[in-house]
Length: 103
Length: 134
Image 1 (cartoon, each protein chain N blue to C red):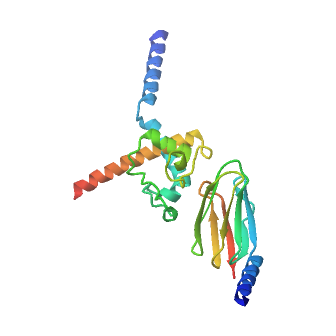
Image 2 (image 1 turned 45 degrees about the vertical axis):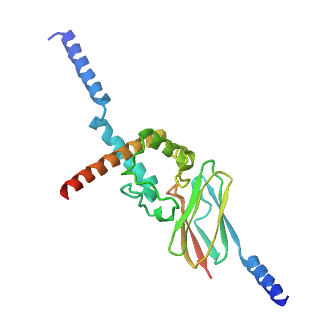
Image 3 (image 1 turned 30 degrees about the vertical axis):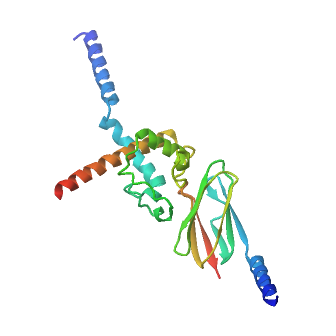
């Protein structure tokens, strides 16, 4: 019973400390060029444009592909490692930003 | 030299010029189209399809379905056009290929399709010359 309570407490404290950083995509631009996050934080990308966007990263720190998504949709990624995570949009190559992930 | 003769010659020259421009594969017309298409390809397609169109772009490894090798594509021009316009999901293929109809202009799409045709031609030439050297 004590173990169960301990695990629940740890899980609660972890989820409480993790933040979600919202980045919007509007007029073919990210709402910010840099997001500072901690390991375990999430970054949400919301498409506010009338056309599709895409989110991916090929960074050494973390690579992922959130796919292509339409207006009003949001895609989320959890930051797993410390380092610079460069974010790009495959549909609009000029769109770039960085997530700086720290411990 | 009468004025009628001058007008007649001018009409002949104009007709020949128009015929040259309208001829299929006329280099004066097709080369700029392919060059423009190469620019579009380099900006929007190279990420997945790679600089030579072989499907080996820097984002290719992330894809569950490998990007198409455009130098070896047997698809018809119309099918390629539909894939470019509607994206992979629009034609029952990989959803990783975006629909470019709302991103690129009609001219850009025509240009890049012309460039894709040139990739097939260059790949065939390479294969033929490669086969000859073996």
